[in-house]
Length: 218
Ligand code: BG6
Ligand code: MG
Image (cartoon, rainbow, N blue to C red; front, side, top):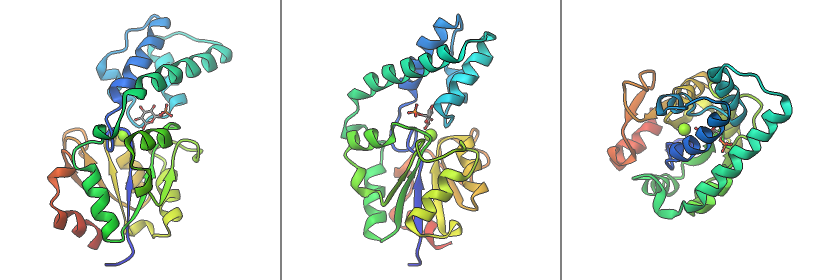
C-alpha cells in the first residue's frame, strides 16, 4: 500500500458531543435573552468556540463588551468540561475503534484535525490517544474550517501528501476544508446535509474493511 493517511474530525465523528455543546451554549444564550434551538446548534457544528459565541451574539441581536465576551467563553467551557466528565471509552461512536485498529494494522497514518481546544482530553477519556500519530486541534491553528489549515497541518505532521489523505467529517465546513486541502472527504452523516462530500456514510460500521482500505488506494 502507498503512503497514505486518515484525518479524523473529533466532535460528531469519533464521539457525539453536540448535545453537551448545546446545553452549555443554551445557558449562555439565556443570559443574552435568546432561545437557542437544536437548529441553531446544527449550524454551530465544526465552528470554533470564539466564532460560535460571535454567532450567538449575532442571533441575539445584542452587543456585549470584550470583557463579557471573555467571561462567556470561559463560563461556556467550564460548563462543557463539567458535562464531558461523563464520557468514557464506551462513548466512541460505532465502528471507530475497529476503524482505527484496521488503519494502524495497515500502516496508514492517523491524525486528528479538530477545531476543539479540548480534543486531547476527550481522546484521553475515550482511551484512544495512542492510535494517533499526530493531533492537530484548536490550539494549533489560526484559521477555522472551512479553511484547510487544520488538515494541511495534519498531513504535514504525518508526512503524507494531501492527495493521499482521506478526511472523515460530519460538518459541511469540514468537508469544504478537506476539499480545499486537496483531500478526499468522507461525510459521516446524511447525504442531504453533506451533499458536497465525495462519499457519505451514516457511521463507520457501514464500511467493510476492504472498502475502507480501498479509499486509500484511489
Ligand atoms: C468543534 C465542534 O469540533 O469544536 C464545535 O463541532 C465546537 O461545536 C468547536 O465549538 C470548538 O470546541 P471547544 O471544545 O474548543 O470549545
Ligand atoms: Mg465535527
